[in-house]
Image (cartoon, rainbow, N blue to C red):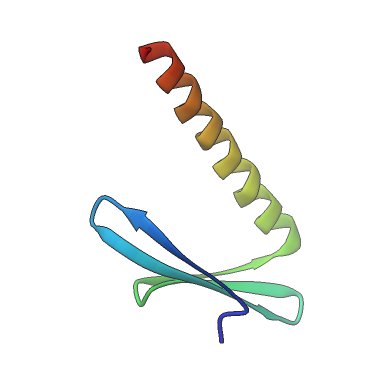
Length: 65
């Protein structure tokens, strides 16, 4: 279980995020809270969304300084 693992901090604590590969899907588990089952196309969409959010946070940080 958990071919890929990372502890991710958030404002309420820490989630242990695990990713398992099952056939043509990745199963992404966020602790015991919820699980996403995504194919390659939707993993790419999620990655792009997270990247854009990260860029937005960086831009906002620079705007404040």
